[in-house]
Length: 299
Image (cartoon, rainbow, N blue to C red):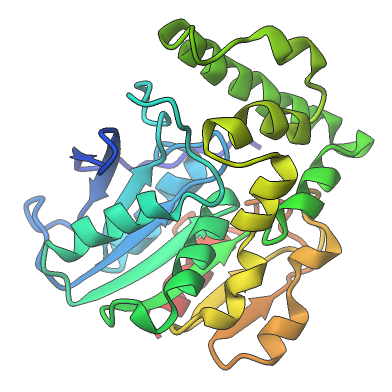
């Protein structure tokens, strides 16, 4: 079933990054004449090859705005419809970009900030919070993430399995398009010659994601970017929801032991939900995940 979400963001804002690139932020506000009231806001982070315009992002934004939250749905580098300015790309561990967004949002004077993320964006959110630990700004009070590959290496193997061939090829087609645009802009730095040798997401990460972002290899990228290693650093109540039937997640992406030993990390494993699915509507047309996130963030 193709879901349609009736929700439009109120405005787009562009901010610069310290390395000379930019990030586009899409803002949604409750009906207060399109301006924030310096009270509370949720920062939403999308998944691989997504954007703030994806249905799951707009659905979550709509549910939170309905409940009085301002929403800042940011687009990772190159995902807002315009190629980014620099050679480096977005990736699963690029928490410095999320930090730039968080700092910008905090400068607007909000009293309460919450973080929410999907898939790659969920890994970014967990890694950001786990890395900062006690240094996390006290205005960041809660977080919720869905369908998160906290173990990137195991997840890359899982998504490249024969049963997931259709999904992996979908992502690879989109990623190749991104590289083609970059190669046109930076022909001395980027070549499309390796395309014929790329069969899996790990191949792509080995040949592009890793070298373009300062990693030695895909293995190095996965090891340094997986959020599973920093979950014990969380200092804000965080809900991680990974469906038992998620086709992209390996067993190590369900951090049962970490959740048991933490007073701040809650792990929920619904029997169904797939990857960023959780299709169960209420009367307002909201997914179960949107209802769950709103309840958790408002506790």
